[in-house]
Image 1: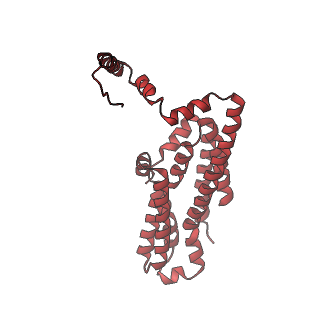
Image 2 (image 1 turned 45 degrees about the vertical axis):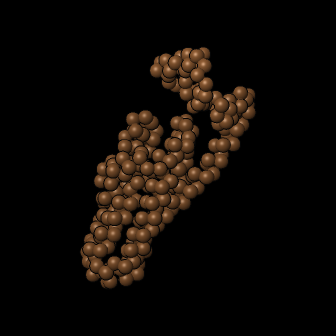
Image 3 (image 1 turned 90 degrees about the horizontal axis):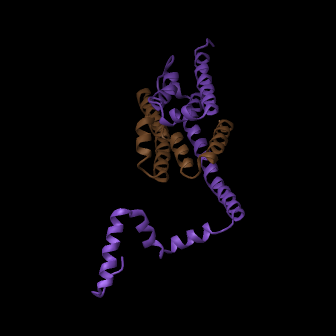
Length: 87
Length: 157
Protein backbone atom coordinates (compact mmCIF):
# COMPACT_ATOMS: atom_id res chain seq x y z
CA UNK A 1 0.00 0.00 0.00
CA UNK A 2 3.00 2.29 0.10
CA UNK A 3 3.17 2.73 -3.66
CA UNK A 4 -0.35 4.18 -4.15
CA UNK A 5 0.25 6.21 -1.00
CA UNK A 6 3.41 7.69 -2.52
CA UNK A 7 1.62 8.51 -5.75
CA UNK A 8 -1.08 10.31 -3.77
CA UNK A 9 1.47 12.01 -1.57
CA UNK A 10 2.91 14.12 -4.39
CA UNK A 11 -0.54 15.52 -5.19
CA UNK A 12 -2.05 16.22 -1.77
CA UNK A 13 -0.68 18.63 0.83
CA UNK A 14 1.24 16.73 3.54
CA UNK A 15 -0.62 18.61 6.27
CA UNK A 16 -3.96 17.32 5.01
CA UNK A 17 -2.73 13.88 3.98
CA UNK A 18 -0.92 13.02 7.21
CA UNK A 19 -3.75 14.44 9.27
CA UNK A 20 -6.31 12.29 7.49
CA UNK A 21 -4.11 9.21 7.83
CA UNK A 22 -3.76 9.85 11.53
CA UNK A 23 -7.52 10.24 11.97
CA UNK A 24 -7.82 6.92 10.13
CA UNK A 25 -5.51 5.15 12.63
CA UNK A 26 -7.54 6.48 15.49
CA UNK A 27 -10.89 5.45 14.01
CA UNK A 28 -9.77 1.97 12.98
CA UNK A 29 -7.97 1.11 16.18
CA UNK A 30 -11.03 2.27 18.09
CA UNK A 31 -13.12 0.02 15.84
CA UNK A 32 -10.96 -2.94 16.88
CA UNK A 33 -12.57 -2.72 20.29
CA UNK A 34 -15.98 -3.45 18.75
CA UNK A 35 -14.98 -6.59 16.81
CA UNK A 36 -17.01 -9.70 17.64
CA UNK A 37 -15.17 -12.27 15.51
CA UNK A 38 -11.70 -13.22 14.37
CA UNK A 39 -12.50 -12.22 10.77
CA UNK A 40 -13.50 -8.76 11.95
CA UNK A 41 -10.25 -8.39 13.82
CA UNK A 42 -8.27 -9.44 10.73
CA UNK A 43 -10.14 -6.90 8.59
CA UNK A 44 -9.42 -4.17 11.14
CA UNK A 45 -5.73 -5.02 11.25
CA UNK A 46 -5.46 -5.05 7.45
CA UNK A 47 -7.20 -1.67 7.22
CA UNK A 48 -4.90 -0.34 9.93
CA UNK A 49 -1.96 -1.40 7.76
CA UNK A 50 -3.47 0.48 4.82
CA UNK A 51 -3.77 3.77 6.70
CA UNK A 52 -0.46 3.44 8.52
CA UNK A 53 1.55 2.81 5.38
CA UNK A 54 1.74 6.44 4.17
CA UNK A 55 3.10 7.75 7.46
CA UNK A 56 6.82 7.04 7.10
CA UNK A 57 7.23 8.20 3.47
CA UNK A 58 4.91 11.09 4.31
CA UNK A 59 7.10 12.18 7.20
CA UNK A 60 10.21 12.02 5.03
CA UNK A 61 8.39 13.93 2.29
CA UNK A 62 7.31 16.62 4.77
CA UNK A 63 10.86 16.99 6.04
CA UNK A 64 12.29 17.12 2.54
CA UNK A 65 10.01 20.02 1.71
CA UNK A 66 11.44 22.08 4.59
CA UNK A 67 15.15 21.30 4.47
CA UNK A 68 17.87 21.37 1.84
CA UNK A 69 19.54 18.11 1.00
CA UNK A 70 22.54 18.60 3.31
CA UNK A 71 20.33 19.56 6.26
CA UNK A 72 17.90 16.74 5.52
CA UNK A 73 20.49 14.00 6.04
CA UNK A 74 21.07 15.06 9.65
CA UNK A 75 17.37 15.35 10.36
CA UNK A 76 16.53 11.93 8.93
CA UNK A 77 19.34 10.41 10.98
CA UNK A 78 17.99 12.03 14.15
CA UNK A 79 14.47 11.04 13.21
CA UNK A 80 15.40 7.36 12.79
CA UNK A 81 17.37 7.43 16.03
CA UNK A 82 14.46 8.88 17.98
CA UNK A 83 12.03 6.41 16.40
CA UNK A 84 14.12 3.52 17.71
CA UNK A 85 14.29 5.09 21.15
CA UNK A 86 10.52 5.53 20.95
CA UNK A 87 9.89 1.87 20.32
CA UNK B 1 -1.24 44.93 -15.81
CA UNK B 2 -1.82 48.67 -16.00
CA UNK B 3 -4.55 49.88 -18.29
CA UNK B 4 -3.53 52.19 -21.08
CA UNK B 5 -5.84 55.13 -20.85
CA UNK B 6 -4.53 57.20 -23.76
CA UNK B 7 -3.83 56.39 -27.36
CA UNK B 8 -0.38 57.89 -27.27
CA UNK B 9 1.68 56.39 -30.13
CA UNK B 10 4.79 56.07 -27.91
CA UNK B 11 2.81 53.99 -25.42
CA UNK B 12 1.53 51.82 -28.22
CA UNK B 13 5.10 51.31 -29.45
CA UNK B 14 6.23 50.43 -25.93
CA UNK B 15 3.37 47.98 -25.66
CA UNK B 16 4.28 46.21 -28.89
CA UNK B 17 7.92 46.12 -27.74
CA UNK B 18 6.76 44.52 -24.51
CA UNK B 19 4.87 41.97 -26.52
CA UNK B 20 7.94 40.94 -28.47
CA UNK B 21 9.89 40.67 -25.19
CA UNK B 22 7.00 38.65 -23.87
CA UNK B 23 7.47 36.06 -26.54
CA UNK B 24 11.25 35.98 -26.25
CA UNK B 25 11.90 35.85 -22.52
CA UNK B 26 8.83 35.33 -20.42
CA UNK B 27 10.76 35.04 -17.17
CA UNK B 28 12.54 38.40 -17.38
CA UNK B 29 9.29 40.05 -18.25
CA UNK B 30 7.62 38.56 -15.17
CA UNK B 31 10.41 39.84 -12.93
CA UNK B 32 10.24 43.38 -14.31
CA UNK B 33 6.47 43.41 -13.91
CA UNK B 34 6.65 42.14 -10.35
CA UNK B 35 9.32 44.59 -9.15
CA UNK B 36 6.53 46.76 -7.75
CA UNK B 37 5.36 43.76 -5.72
CA UNK B 38 6.08 44.20 -1.97
CA UNK B 39 7.18 40.55 -1.72
CA UNK B 40 9.89 41.11 -4.31
CA UNK B 41 11.04 44.23 -2.43
CA UNK B 42 11.25 42.22 0.81
CA UNK B 43 13.26 39.59 -1.02
CA UNK B 44 15.65 42.22 -2.40
CA UNK B 45 16.09 43.75 1.08
CA UNK B 46 16.99 40.36 2.54
CA UNK B 47 19.28 39.46 -0.32
CA UNK B 48 21.26 42.69 0.12
CA UNK B 49 22.31 41.83 3.69
CA UNK B 50 25.74 40.60 4.71
CA UNK B 51 26.62 36.93 4.74
CA UNK B 52 27.00 36.87 8.56
CA UNK B 53 23.48 38.21 8.93
CA UNK B 54 22.22 35.55 6.53
CA UNK B 55 24.04 32.73 8.34
CA UNK B 56 22.69 33.81 11.71
CA UNK B 57 19.12 34.10 10.47
CA UNK B 58 19.36 30.80 8.58
CA UNK B 59 20.36 28.96 11.75
CA UNK B 60 17.54 30.67 13.67
CA UNK B 61 15.05 29.62 11.02
CA UNK B 62 16.40 26.07 10.99
CA UNK B 63 16.06 25.79 14.74
CA UNK B 64 12.49 27.02 14.52
CA UNK B 65 11.59 24.47 11.82
CA UNK B 66 13.35 21.72 13.80
CA UNK B 67 11.38 22.49 16.92
CA UNK B 68 8.09 22.52 15.04
CA UNK B 69 8.56 19.52 12.79
CA UNK B 70 10.60 16.81 14.48
CA UNK B 71 8.81 16.54 17.87
CA UNK B 72 5.44 16.34 16.12
CA UNK B 73 6.59 13.62 13.76
CA UNK B 74 8.12 11.65 16.63
CA UNK B 75 4.89 11.98 18.57
CA UNK B 76 2.95 10.76 15.53
CA UNK B 77 5.23 7.77 15.29
CA UNK B 78 4.64 7.03 18.97
CA UNK B 79 0.88 6.95 18.35
CA UNK B 80 1.45 4.80 15.26
CA UNK B 81 3.47 2.39 17.36
CA UNK B 82 0.79 2.25 20.04
CA UNK B 83 -1.80 1.41 17.38
CA UNK B 84 0.34 -1.40 16.07
CA UNK B 85 1.26 -2.92 19.40
CA UNK B 86 -2.04 -2.72 21.27
CA UNK B 87 -3.00 -6.21 20.08
CA UNK B 88 -0.37 -7.75 22.35
CA UNK B 89 -1.87 -5.79 25.21
CA UNK B 90 -5.30 -7.16 24.34
CA UNK B 91 -3.94 -10.72 24.34
CA UNK B 92 -2.99 -10.29 27.99
CA UNK B 93 -6.70 -9.79 28.58
CA UNK B 94 -9.29 -12.20 27.23
CA UNK B 95 -8.84 -11.56 23.49
CA UNK B 96 -8.43 -15.17 22.41
CA UNK B 97 -11.38 -16.50 24.41
CA UNK B 98 -13.64 -13.67 23.24
CA UNK B 99 -12.92 -14.11 19.53
CA UNK B 100 -12.55 -17.93 19.53
CA UNK B 101 -8.96 -17.75 18.33
CA UNK B 102 -6.67 -20.76 18.46
CA UNK B 103 -3.16 -21.76 17.46
CA UNK B 104 -1.39 -19.23 15.24
CA UNK B 105 -4.45 -17.05 14.76
CA UNK B 106 -2.89 -14.40 16.96
CA UNK B 107 0.30 -14.40 14.89
CA UNK B 108 -1.76 -14.03 11.72
CA UNK B 109 -3.67 -11.09 13.20
CA UNK B 110 -0.42 -9.41 14.22
CA UNK B 111 1.42 -9.89 10.96
CA UNK B 112 -1.38 -9.12 8.48
CA UNK B 113 -0.81 -5.41 9.17
CA UNK B 114 2.79 -5.63 8.00
CA UNK B 115 1.85 -7.76 4.99
CA UNK B 116 -0.52 -5.07 3.77
CA UNK B 117 1.82 -2.28 4.75
CA UNK B 118 4.93 -3.50 2.96
CA UNK B 119 3.13 -4.95 -0.04
CA UNK B 120 4.99 -2.72 -2.44
CA UNK B 121 8.34 -1.09 -1.71
CA UNK B 122 8.47 2.62 -1.22
CA UNK B 123 10.28 4.71 -3.81
CA UNK B 124 12.07 6.56 -1.04
CA UNK B 125 13.88 3.36 -0.22
CA UNK B 126 15.14 3.13 -3.79
CA UNK B 127 16.31 6.74 -3.71
CA UNK B 128 18.14 6.23 -0.43
CA UNK B 129 19.77 3.07 -1.71
CA UNK B 130 21.04 4.91 -4.77
CA UNK B 131 22.30 8.05 -3.09
CA UNK B 132 23.65 7.25 0.30
CA UNK B 133 25.77 4.25 1.20
CA UNK B 134 25.48 4.90 4.93
CA UNK B 135 21.68 5.09 4.92
CA UNK B 136 21.55 2.03 2.69
CA UNK B 137 23.62 0.07 5.20
CA UNK B 138 21.40 1.25 8.06
CA UNK B 139 18.34 0.16 6.10
CA UNK B 140 19.81 -3.23 5.29
CA UNK B 141 20.71 -3.67 8.93
CA UNK B 142 17.14 -2.94 9.92
CA UNK B 143 15.71 -5.31 7.31
CA UNK B 144 18.08 -8.08 8.44
CA UNK B 145 17.12 -7.47 12.03
CA UNK B 146 13.43 -7.59 11.13
CA UNK B 147 13.91 -10.87 9.27
CA UNK B 148 15.84 -12.35 12.17
CA UNK B 149 12.88 -11.68 14.44
CA UNK B 150 10.72 -14.10 12.47
CA UNK B 151 12.26 -17.44 13.63
CA UNK B 152 12.00 -16.28 17.22
CA UNK B 153 8.21 -16.13 16.85
CA UNK B 154 8.07 -19.82 15.99
CA UNK B 155 10.30 -21.11 18.75
CA UNK B 156 8.60 -23.74 20.94
CA UNK B 157 7.53 -22.29 24.24
